[in-house]
Image 1 (cartoon, rainbow, N blue to C red):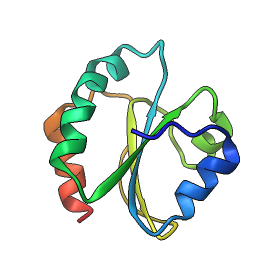
Image 2 (image 1 turned 60 degrees about the horizontal axis):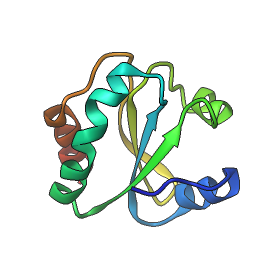
Image 3 (image 1 turned 180 degrees about the horizontal axis):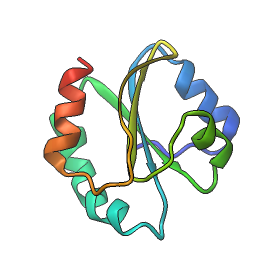
Length: 105
């Protein structure tokens, strides 16, 4: 899981050619902490994707721009374009995240 150092680093990841999963989270978010331990397994099961953890509170302007109103949320970007999203305020399961990624292949 990549953790961007700053907004410039995050912008470079968005523009990259790879399929990149942006995982919006926050330390205080119980539902985020529910899915976070499953993220290493999800990464291993989806080697075609690069994973980026985005602290929603630290990058609030980006979250607003992308319509991230609830967390945890997932947005898949490839070549700077959105391919898929799982954005709502509900708890996410490993199966839901894998289904999202399967739809973005």
